[in-house]
Image (cartoon, rainbow, N blue to C red; front, top):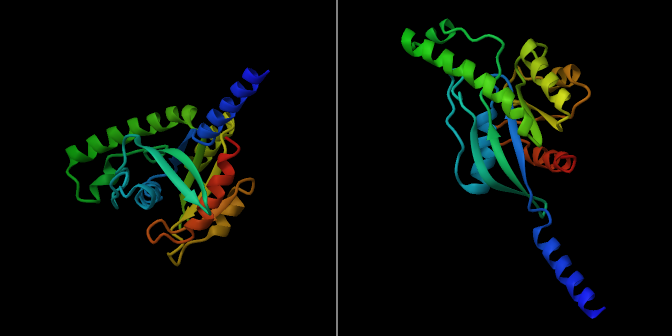
Length: 213
């Protein structure tokens, strides 16, 4: 009897040591130039001191899936461990001519378009491994489009917990209400990844969502 009690004691100690240490896969999805990498960079910078990827005004700067292991986010005394996954922007059509207006050479534009197309396929494949997904949308753009519906549709099919972020609320043209109206079944948080505005509410929502994973 004493041995059984002794064993149970150490079992409880072991479980407590590893309780809450699961590393959840947190994916950032959305159309090109919505601010996925900017948000991922800010989170990683705040909690690891290192950024995750490069950003650019040219669409499809991120053309391969990027990872940041063991990012421990702390909010109001609570901590959660995440594997951050930044994905290439989802697009239904990628034309190399769209890059020419950024003064890219035709050869470079064609290569970028090819890599971006491959990145879209890779992004969709990675959905099967996600525990939680943050959809980052540009709050200055019309949310009613095929790209956003495609992303939402894929997530619904996989029953993955979702948080929608309306980014760029620092811009005058931004409208959180339009995004809320477009996706009333999801929580929408307005932020500015560039200036770190309203990230406290974002972290609170992520912690709540992670409990569903």
